[in-house]
Image (cartoon, rainbow, N blue to C red; front, side, top):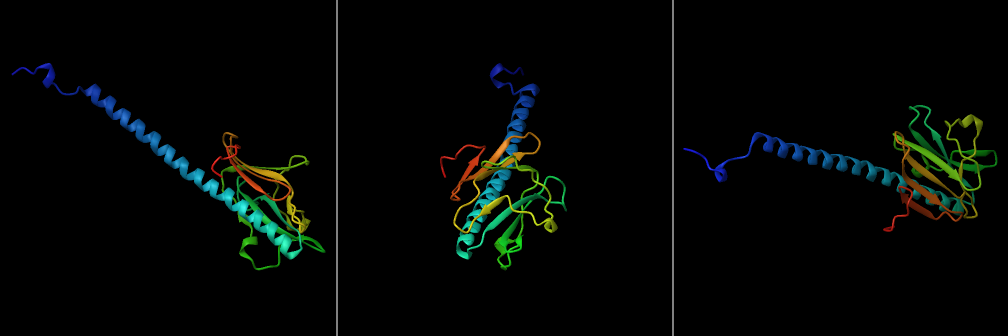
Length: 187
């Protein structure tokens, strides 16, 4: 019995092309889903830092004592991990806050990103390991009078140098979260 053209099935090449397209689409979708999780994690970290800075500003006003955040490379980890160390101004200088508030414990920031701190009217800030015996001053200060050192903190992709997120604040401590350095219309 001879098959007519309308009864013939798919050729092997047509099946291989269809499987290749399905595999390619599946790979693209899985890459986007994986990257979306990392972007959500980074956004959560940026929002967390923003909330901590706002809390420190409020605490500075309520306690009538300056508070600050020192952003440093984590000396105990590799060079891609940053920590935020909270400090409070006392008569002897800057030191860890004495309160038992968990909010003022040091903050480990996500690994794999490069951080860049820009402070208004100041030269580029180099982020170095924290050495408490040197009694360093924090880079970001929330003064008891309600002001804050204006500036921005940028999260960059360590491999490409691409700007992933920027947190910017003004003299009054108003925070602006900017994915890819652009103001998000939804915020």
